[in-house]
Structures are given as C-alpha cells and as structure tokens.
Length: 528
Ligand code: NAP
Image (cartoon, rainbow, N blue to C red):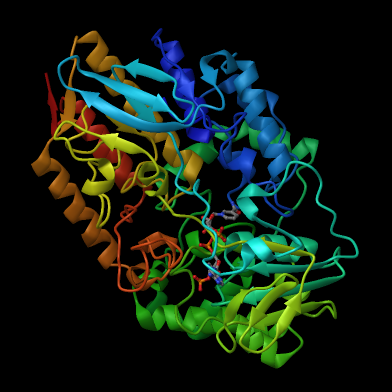
C-alpha cells in the first residue's frame, strides 16, 4: 500500500483484519498525510468533525471527543495517531519510503516497487492511498532563490514555530488555504500583503466548541448522522432544500439564504436549492446574494469589489469556508494587492515586485495550491502491462474504472482515485466506501486464487463517458480551478485544458454503482 493518510490508515486496518501480509509505504516521516503536512495557521476541517471521523468502529466513536465543530489540524493529527495506536497499525507502516517507480512483471504477476532510497519491494497487489491534494505547486516566478526572507508553500509549513509578530508577511493565493491563513494571521503580524490573482467566493464556517453534553448527544446519534451523510449528494450532514428554486419568491429564497449563511459548514451548498449548481440564472441570483454579504462586511467599497468574483458563479469552484476573513481587510495592517491590475513580475532579494511596485517582506507564504488529483501518480514512474507508463496514459487527463482501477495496470487499486466521488464529496465518508469496496475485491481475489485482475477497456471507456456527462451538466464545468484540473503552475494543465477528475453524480449514486459491480461478480473487471 502507498500512503498513510486518512485513507491509508483505514485501508491497512481492513487488510490486517483480513489476515493479509500487507505494509504501507509512506513518503513522509510519520503518518497523517494531509493532516501531517498542512501545519499552517488556521488549518482545520470544513466538514463537520463528527462526519470526518471513521465510522467503522463503535469504540472509536465512543472514545473520541471532538472539541470543535470544525476541528483544527493539530487535533486532527492527534485523532489519526489515536486511531493508528488504538489498532496498533503503526507497525505495518514504513516511513520515509517515497515510491519512485513501479513496474508490472507480467511473468510473475507482481509489482516491482522502487523507493527513492533505492530499496525495492515486490507485491502481488498494490493499493494507492496517495491523496487528491498531496503535491504542492510553487508559483513559477523568477528570483525566489534570491529572496532573503523566509519563503515556503503552506503544505510545507515548518514543524518548528514560525514567528509572526513584528513581521511583514506576503500571502500569494486566495483559495481555501490562503483564506484560512489570512484570516488567522491578520491580527498577529505587523503587516500583511495579500497577493490576489482571482478572488474566490467564500462563506462563513460558523465554527463553535463542542461541549461534553453535545458530544454525548452526537455519540447517541452517530448512526443517524452517518445514514444522513450516505443519503445526500455531497455526503454531508445537511439535507437539500426540497422546494424548487423557481417555485418560491425571491424574498423566500433570500430568507432561506439568510438562514444558511449562519448555519455551520457546507449547509450553504448542501442545503441550498439544487438549481444553483445547474441553472445560470439561479446561480447568478445566489452569487449576487453572497456579493451583498461581502459588501456588507468589507468597509472599503473598492476592496469589497475586488474580493467579489466576477469570472465564475458561487460554488462553481471549490467553496472555501472562512472565519472573519472579510473583516481582516478592515484592519490597517492588511492590504489587498490586486494582481489583475498589477501582476507579479518576480521575487527580489527584499520581497515581491509587481509591475506597480516592490513589496518588502520578511516572510512569503505560497498558498498556491496543488497538482490536484493526478499529481501524486504523475510523480511516480508506473509502468503497466502494455509497457507504457501511467503518466503517458493519462497525459490528457485520467481514465479509470470508477476511480478504483485503470486498464493496462493490473492488480493496482486506488482509494480516492481520479474519477471517483471522493474529490467531489465529503472526503472521509467517500473514502470509507472506496476502502470497503477495495477490501471486498482483495478478499474475493485472494480467496478465489485470482492472480491477475484488470479493468476492461470498454468498461473504463463507458465510465469515462459517464464522468464527462455528469460534469457537463453542472456549472462546475466552466470552473478554472482544481476541480477541472486547471493549474497554470503545472506544465500542460493551464488555459484551454479541461480534465475530468471527479465524478459529479453524487455520493449515493456512486456507492450504489460500485456496490452493484461487486454484487454482480465484478462486472467490467477481467480476472484470471
Ligand atoms: P487552490 O484552491 O488551488 O488556490 C490556489 C490559489 O493560489 C488561487 O487563488 C490561485 O489563483 C493562486 N495562485 C496560484 N498560482 C499563483 C501565481 N503564480 N500567482 C498568484 N496567485 C497564484 O489551492 P488551496 O487554497 O491550497 O486549496 C486547494 C484545496 O485544498 C481546496 O480547494 C480544498 O479542497 C482543500 N483545502 C481544504 C481545506 C479545509 O478546510 N478542509 C483547507 C484548505 C484547502 P487563481 O485562482 O488565479 O489560479
């Protein structure tokens, strides 16, 4: 197995329970994946904590107390360590084990795995649990090596405390990460320059502590909560609005949005009128509502306008949730630098130079995102049965069978793979379905003495078409963000490229489809 993050921890638990000889190779020096790496200030869940925890064990659910509705990174990492220790999983993990290459050996029907250290392993089956946002990308500006201050990507925020007091900090990027960092450090730094290329829509997280009593209540309702998550499109604990958008008056719609704006988490998406995701008019009205909220929170009207997206509608890119983000711009020490007006030219020894001026900085934080979904696969040389690499097969975008396997690469399974529902729905809920499916398949093939399985080419093509159809129905199809594989910092992923990275048909449909495949004897999977 590759990866000891949220998916890998659960997957190894299931494999160990089956009595298989299994290990996890983890590139980092410890477990936790996303929650090990992203230590930047403000980093926290935006799914309700109690829907993020694993559902598979009653003991875990009973023993763990989530302290906040949206728990912070240090607590999340403690939780993952608690799970690993509770089930003694650490002894199945090898750390500092970055897989560089994997080659399928057709004669032996095994994978030959080579680590960056040169060490090698062989395995009949390989399961990847390498995350969807695990490869950070730096902006491609000249002069970064000459910059005399500190500079790092949020994903590489140092383990040792980074002083903020008395320093002038620049943050490049206003995605979910940038928005969390900016809001958290605005009142701690001397000066903060936010380098914004395009604004994102963002709405309040509405976080709050969870008391002992509330936690006891949540524990008593876990079955109901998980059942509700399983029944909703996005896998969240919020039921969709049943009234049709156009059947209610604008005043009724506004009253509903007023309620959602102060409801915790992704309610503003998940409990909204579904039309806002499909119907341009409906989306425009919703966008105008949120724009009004931003205008109401940012004192300077020029800054407010700059913070309102004009190039995409509400929630058509991944929606960041915020805590007093907009209020940060009302502070005298926080300055929005609009890169649409004056783009960055380069880094200088003293800071960042735009076409308008130089900004002197002590610390430059790159909240510039990830080579999303396929990035972790592209960094390895995975050579399959037909001699080509996975990178070559996926050059114009991934092709998979339900995001679980890919034709030409036998005995290779993916948890949260490209074109699954993991990236488009509540991640932990989605990966549990993926892990359960993969485990069931592994159990089936090991019991049946099957030594080779592979997604059929036709079956994979059919799934790819469904993935395209689902994406094309939604306004998300036009997004220029990681949902559609857009990233100008990654070679070949810039303007004019659309990738089909996620399944947008919803968590229940996805789960029902993959369950049916298993029940019908792994339809579409060729087994020998
Ligand atoms: P992101 O959404 O891809 O945002 C990257 C930001 O950097 C964008 O604003 C982008 O601008 C900007 N940028 C990139 N290159 C730039 C350049 N060369 N010059 C100036 N600006 C540049 O990345 P992210 O914020 O790290 O978030 C990625 C995903 O991680 C999220 O969507 C979410 O799924 C996940 N996440 C989750 C949480 C959570 O609460 N659980 C928190 C953080 C992240 P453009 O838009 O113009 O490209």
